[in-house]
Amino acid sequence: MNKKTSNPVAKVLLGIFFIILCILFLIPLYALLLGTFKGGAELFVSGLNLNPSFSLLHTKAWRYLFTGIMSNGEYNPHDYFLWYRNSLMVVLVQGSLTLLLSSMVAYGLAKYNFKGKNVIFMCVLMVMMVPLEILMLPMYTQVNAMGLRNSYAGVMLPFLVSMSAVFFFRQFLTGIPYEMIEAGRIDGCTEYGVFFRIIVPVMKPAYASMAVLTGMGAWNALLWPMLVLSDMKKYTIPIGLNTLWSPYGNNYDLMITGSCFAILPLLLIYLFAQRFIVEGMTAGAVKG
Image 1: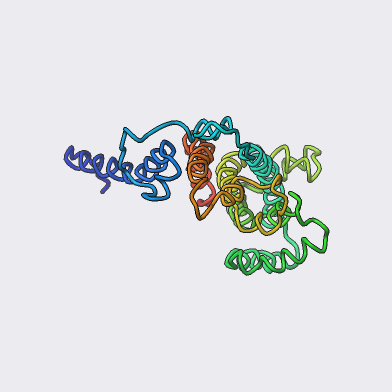
Image 2 (image 1 turned 135 degrees about the vertical axis):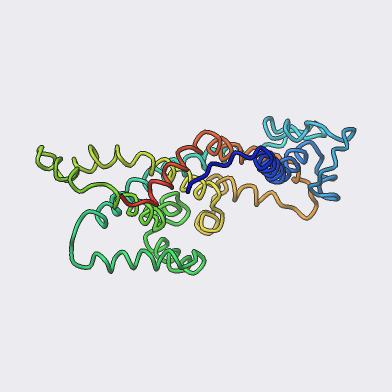
């Protein structure tokens, strides 16, 4: 027998639990935001903490980030917004191509019957279990042999077909009736027409959820872009912020403020796309 939970005490306790959980998740963000209003010397000594110390707070770090004017009044230009633009470009290009190519591979594995289909899918699963660090050396050797080192093509090329995205899209596509594809063929659609006119519109929830995940991965990527790129003007946000580390702590204020500003796109994505994430994950996990 199905019974609906109507106990008001249970609802109150559940609400309190989620409020506490939300506060625990917001504490690191609060510490990071508070650190942007502290000087580099203070951050070097005390690090990030939850102590407000309102008498010591100031907005010099934010002024330095947006204008390049340091606390002593000197103008010290930096490449932060160039790195920001580079990261946005990589995310948009790599994310778009990854969604397109991965969904096409998944469509072939889900809706076509050919020899070796199951073997290819097993290879997809095995590659998903291999850590990126193990693949970096052969990937770098291949990229270097192709003359793509120190280029955005070298950064994006190995990830244009994501094994996790292929697996996710394939699971989603197994729930789409094959009769839809046959109807498109009967109406005169080519194989590409069937994919772009019938399959792509149906896959919107899956595209939305995977776009968030692939975008976050490209935005936060550090090891591989740092291995491929050597020109500081081509650095992305994670690499650029990593170069600001100094034993003397003279760039801690810019690094902390830059980190706070860098997570803004991810927060906005979570706030406005969480519904699509849930829909896409649910639809991709159920076969029917």
